[in-house]
Image (cartoon, rainbow, N blue to C red; front, side, top):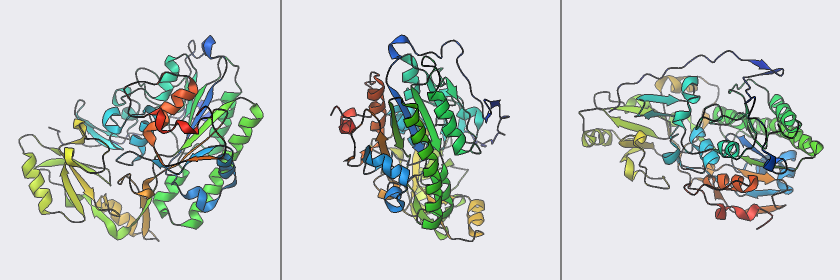
Length: 426
């Protein structure tokens, strides 16, 4: 069983300066050329607006996103996978696989094979491709001979199957949104044989403000969304000016729910180092039983202290769309009641010192509408002014394969049939 683990936070590496932008950008000097069969359409940009809840555009009516939707397609919402957390759901969108199969079970999780806790703040682990299962869309495009690029997206910094995008940046949240848009437009302006066919982009604005103030602080949320919308408008105008047949898909990984400070549960309340280790993701706590201890003893102990949370054997844990089988989940799962959230005592005390009492969190049951994100798309492949019902995020990957002319892998969880109505051909 798992040894006691200490999660190390590493300093970020020195930022390279390339083409006047911060961040490290690399290029396969010999291979970053589209094969002859792809010196034509298609182009695809996948944009993630982290934490963008399904109802924000309807509530605030940002002009550029509203116009984008009017000229394209939308789903009523994009349904995340459980747990509705950032890293698992970004990578599910990229691969068409549930977290149980692609292996990124949470923003942090224990990996039995490596005997280490994967943590999104550990640069060495984030950039280690062996943690990332499946074959993300940029790898599929690469294998088909397409040049790819990324200005951030979960997995693009890692050598997944030995492959990174031809052009990519190591994550740095200080890089301005305007710089990200300028770079994307620069990529689209490159000579045809070097021009990326597949680009991913990432913006964290709505997630940042949602966590800090909650999803119902209209004043702060509205201002943040309008600022982001203006930058996206620059991207949309730039694409039109370049004149290429670019398809743009805009998604988010999850929504957001209010969590008052008095509904945070100290993770210390359920910790018991004599029986097990805890891996805390706030909305789900993975329990890894120590060697020599029994599941029943751990289960009995946790049930004896149940408060606004419940404990389950992993295979019987609710909210999963499948029977969880990945051993990295651990033997038991602790789920807080809706509206409650696990955090450290230190984290709770810091929140109590803030001048507001409600914060935003996610990770809960995907059936809760507040957990739903967005799916918008526009371009030559898509219908116009068309809406479909809510759709699971596992289906975005086969849609992207279809647009890029790639063969859809047979062993994925996503299904093109569930989303193909957004395409002109259907």
